[in-house]
Amino acid sequence: MSIADFDFNLSTRCDFHTHTHCSDGQLSPAQLLERAENFQIDVLAITDHDTTAALDIANRYILEKSLKVTLLTGIEISTMWQNFEIHIVGLNIDPDHEAMKTLVASQQAARESRALQMGEKLAKCGFENMTEKAKALAGDGSITRAHFARVLYNEGRVSNMQAAFDKYIGKKQRAFVKPLWCDVARAVDVIHQAGGTAVIAHPMRYDMTSKWLRRLILDFKAAGGDAMEIVLPQMSPDQRRLMLTFCLEYDLYASLGSDFHFPSKWSDLGRNLTLPEQVKPVWSLWR
Ligand code: AMP
Ligand code: MN
Ligand code: MN
Ligand code: MN
Image 1: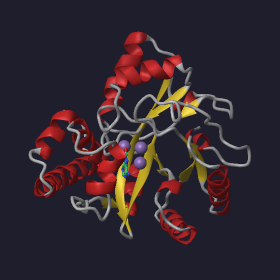
Image 2: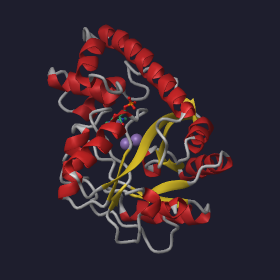
Image 3: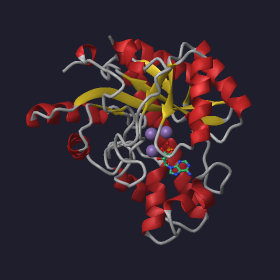
């Protein structure tokens, strides 16, 4: 079914932020869809990091298996804003639009060159061939820091994935390389050209003060941005209240998603995802 015909309401089971192994998710598009079907998700967006590769595969799988779930096309674009890495989700995009294909190509080139430099820095930390190994894990998909973290963990160099970020590849750490992402305005513009809706991803996760977050929202609005995610699992009640306040105050549409990367008790597909009644749901833009 096309999204324009979908009859959304507040009890529709939606998850508008998920990853597959086309970026740093653990499941294939088919496995993710099977999981969504089992969890009785009505509408699932796949939003891989800087790639739309999963969308065709997913669409074909839904047809082939006659799944009930409706796929919403998506992407999560990494951007740089005031030295913060901000993620902008594009929903209901045309992945074949030329502007989108051009942006994806340049983001992939930025990922490639960052991966090479990260490998050089990790070599200086005593870890050889990290880029090669991370790329082997990533396969044809987007190469991400999560792949480097996984290699460091698999080889017993760190005790968990988080430690890889804390010790080596996180901001300000020894093997951190400043990425050459596009800016927020470009991401919003390209999402719009591709017919989509631009959403600030997980606004509470940027480790910024409310003052900075307000500035980000104002710049995002000035660029024509549409919506922000205000419901994710693992948000504290305080965070939920604050993000709802910002969403209403700045008159943005509201989105929701699990940011699913792998099966887990705390942030599985569609888990505890319901928008509050006061907001304008992001799906009202698609009718
Ligand atoms: P990248 O987009 O290549 O910089 O990779 C970042 C990805 O690594 C995120 O999308 C997360 O899935 C994952 N990740 C896990 N822990 C962290 C962390 N502490 N900081 C940043 N990213 C993390
Ligand atoms: Mn990720
Ligand atoms: Mn993100
Ligand atoms: Mn994500």
